[in-house]
Image (tube, rainbow, N blue to C red; front, side, top):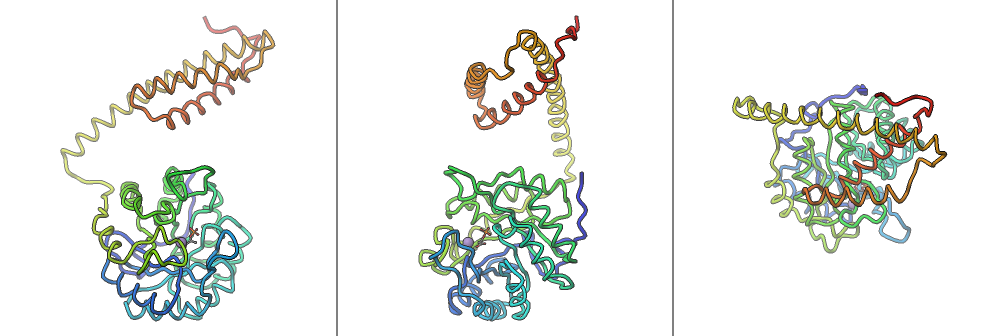
Length: 366
Ligand code: PEP
Ligand code: MN
């Protein structure tokens, strides 16, 4: 079901942008000079908003926790010099109050805060009656409702210039990304709230600069409206997130390579070809559906047989062997193991449900 939010599109935010709405700047504000130099550097790229963390939510105590409220005037001065509006992470009503006093233009809610509905509600209450754009990062766990709930709380406080930032999700044992993208979540949020602007934060997804181009390309292919990228004048000396920040020059290169994708075209040849390919996909899906139906019917029969003989539904050895065989077969067909694993976990779960429902009294159809 679609979720209705009373929001306006990015083009009505009063912040100019060219194709992609780019937010860039350091993970943390460190000094007035650092912010000024960054602002003047990023002003040469198509950057719409400058970011800087002032109060840093660090996972463990003892690391750099931000320069605090003094950084707000440094950031504002840098933004003014470069002619760029500025944004800061707020985690409590005191942060909101300080930002509004210093004329910060846009606020963002960090991943750790989105995770806590009490904290989000306190922010919403502090924002009531104030007209400022707010960006809501996804919660650290892949929980769509928690993310949507935070957006709803802020929207219900009267904030209509609202966007979501996808920064990936904590995942145990993840090796490639700092925060696993789980792309289906932003895809799902777009389906549920089609008018919500979506911004991708490839810096916190990747945790390292080499992955930035791939993630930016993916975001463009998934029709994201904007990007939030961490940028530092001397990344190696950055006081937080040093491995994932790029210089303003590197940011310029990244953005010049980012190709905005169109949602559609009226080119007749493209329209003919895509219509043909899509109708083939539709036919194949119909066949997949028919096969699944037949497969579940057999599961019901198996369930009946097990019930008659007082046999448990789950047969770990059979499941283990079947999964192994399917993965081997899938690999030989060029299909990814992770995909087949997820697919068969779903099929197996549904098959168990069909076996549970089986009535031993009922005779299978002839
Ligand atoms: C940040 O943007 O620097 C930050 C702390 O991000 P997140 O809330 O996504 O971890
Ligand atoms: Mn950071």
